[in-house]
Image (tube, rainbow, N blue to C red):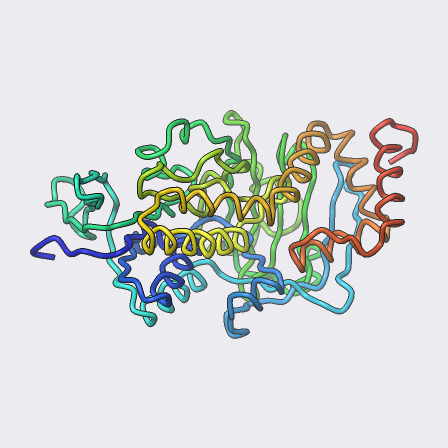
Length: 399
């Protein structure tokens, strides 16, 4: 870039949310620049539900594994298996999956740049100048510039765009996640199953969240999350690998990052900046699931940004959050309550895993997860779950 190039939209961050927003805007005929730092991989279990695969036309070739059950493990090592009846959850490797999304954006006409966002400046004509540092010029390099009519911040949980544009963005609550990608053992070694996700609710592994073993075909993600800054995530993963017999397997790479667990109250600056994905805080509480919600948010963000570009009315940007919360806010609210209550102590975690034995709970949980909407077809099942849940909360039944 020898001169300032102008675009309708500049998307900062090329993860699932940013790549999706860029793709949707380009498909709508807008000129789009996508700025992303190559080689950055977010720690993630990599699970994607069938609805994501359908809604966003994800090819089966990107799936490195198909999970057909989950195993919940309690503090006393009680195991509850939750099979998926007639379906599966797809597993992806984020380095390959995210790059495929960015490549798809480029095939739709998006201009890609590899670099680091530094800051932006609003102009009197309503546009914004984005300053970024190209790859290879870290520290003292000449900053490049791009002009945009709308800026979409998709640069992760500690979004630099959010900190500059949205007051209070730095106060977003986080869970810190750390995982180690290892070579997968053979099925049966250390009770490993390449078609099963293990979720461990044990205080020794996480005082306020959970630990996991998620198969990725040739590789496996072994990780933990916690909001407790004094808790050793690396130590917990070492314990988990030792307990599960995975400590002898070769470690391919290690990754860590904060994961937000509550959407920001506002995603736009009232002018021409809009947040999507982790930058907006759209990771589901309790589960930490983020890929589907990130892509859904990116899609809705692109829709709102397109309306803004067509009308010049900055109020259109607010519609991204309104639409997202209308579609998913109730689920986030319920999951937030679950996390706040059931994850607090090992005795509550024990009861939570016990609840997961219930066939109604298993059926409705998988239906909600696979289809991304609350199941209303079985009202009596909801009633039964409510009273069973209440009994466990009050300690009226044994775990």
